[in-house]
Amino acid sequence: MTFATATARTLVNPADALERACAHLLSLQSPDGWWKGELETNICMDAEDLLLREFLGIRTPAETAQAATWIRSQQHPDGGWAIAHGAPVDLSASVEGYAALRLAGDPANAAHMRRAREQILELGGLERSRVFTRIWLALFGLWSWQELPALPPEIILLPPWFPLNIYDFASWARQTIVPLTIVSAHRPKRPIAFSLHELWRGDASPRKRAAIHTWSGAFERLDSLLHRYERRPWRRLRQRSLQVATEWIVRRQEADGCWGGIQPPWVYSLMALHLLGYPLDHPIMKKGLEGLDRFAIIDDRGRRMEACQSPVWDTCLAALALLDGQVPGDHPALVRAAGWLMDQEIRHAGDWAVRRPNLQPSGWAFEFENDTYPDIDDTAEVILALRQIDHPDRDRRDQVIARARAWVLGMQCRDGGFAAFDVDNVRGLCREIPFCDFGEVIDPPSADVTAHVLEMLAAEGLAGEVRGVRARDWLLRAQEADGSWFGRWGVNHIYGCGAAVPALRRAGLSSDSAAIAAAVRWIEAHQNDDGGWGEDVRSYETPAWRGRGKSTASQTAWALLALLDGDSDAQSIERGIDYLIATQREDGGWDEEACTGTGFPSDFYIKYHMYRLYFPIMALGRFVRRD
Image 1 (cartoon, rainbow, N blue to C red):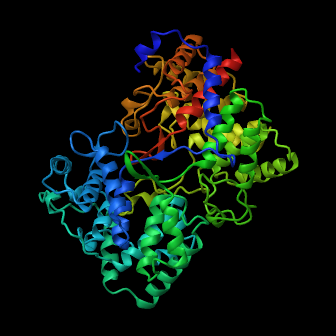
Image 2 (image 1 turned 135 degrees about the horizontal axis):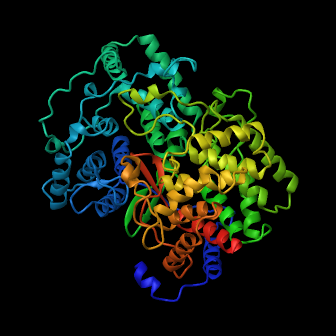
Image 3 (image 1 turned 60 degrees about the horizontal axis):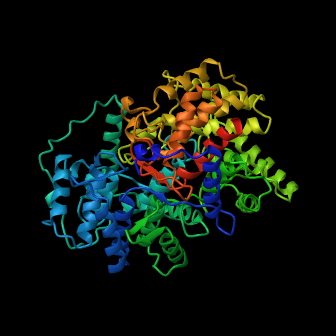
């Protein structure tokens, strides 16, 4: 149904729309108390899953056919594959999709394969794909290991104070890099029944080396030295580094078999252990493979892999939405959610303790199992939810909140901001290393995480204390010149505003302060003609796309959350609310095709299937309450 069709009917009362949406959200809760929507990404996850299974010798015809069906369904009419709905075709995603379909038996001369090949060649050919894509190809002799950046396992032996040690990398990057060093050291080449010679352009002239006084030039020369070392590594040092890296990986396997709760380090860890001689029936391998199967979604559209699962994030945000929707704090669904969340508190130290060894552990991870990497964003939102839920065991609830709050405060960075997983993980030099082309590899403070923490501190009565003031000041400094905030974990400046404005208002800023007024003006200026808001993922690369794109339910809700706290013009708010009402489905939910979540800006985006439900509930709930 188009917006024009929807507005032709009589609009539903906002309170009725809110009630219907809350009922729909309540119906989606697990009996155990959690919510979890699908976390949809791009076909690289599915292509790499097939390549992993081929590498391990466990690929089945049924899995292959189902995955191929999904990959074909995501192909653009012009032949390639993108990393987000509506985004331009991406070279590396197209190479991986093409390789997976060749693995599935699609002939190179099939019409859809010819279209894909033409797109790949137009974008530069196989030789212009990212390093991680070429690593996958090297596993099967489709690319030379010698032509890849060196990745020696000896990096694991660098102490935490030494530049470019593994803890200088973000949690997701170090989990990927460590197993890849083992894979790189072995340089495997498994036989495969096809080549990809048809994807080579062969016209790339030799790249001129960067000047030696630049970081790029320095790393190019270091890479040449490391390649020489790789030909004849010091045996005892190599054996020691492989042993330490193996122990590091094994210690970090989670209870459900995953590594970090995310697909990339999971598959690389399985490959690394397999190369080290771990048989497929070894308990670690068996648990890892069984866990990976639980990330597969199979339906009439085929088989697709979730890169991650988000039950803690979905549960705390669903609870906050219901509370905004005037569901009472002692509602059984909220009490169940609070009980489940309290059971998920992490009570032992993870990698964060390398930088904060004396901090008592607490916090929540994003996933069902990821105790090594609790994150500050989830933890702040869980505290906000728990504080408002009337759980019968109030003493336990208060103790959990106190521990988690102390942990969050202990994770504040030197500059006053808050990052997602680590403290002061800001060594930009990591981005210059040749193999780090798969997305962001460090975890600096971000506006959205800092805002969520500040909002939590305000709810806990701590916004006026030193650490709350430092967080507020960091957030004010991070405001863009146009009045918006950069959205690290959501697309993009609309998400940043939707987090920052409510946080600053709760921390004491008045609606007529310069920062709030500028943000409100920016949001109002970017409202679409249909009354909603949208922002294209291209805003991460092209400033002209900031705040611009097809309207979506989640992004409209984020804009409304900011306007409702910013005392915006009533007409802008009412038009936004009308958009949500007009586009609501009969069952109380909303449709949303776009990816509005962010993994790595410009590289990896996420379609959270529940964003289109609980964020609109928050906006409608706050509107009804204010009205």
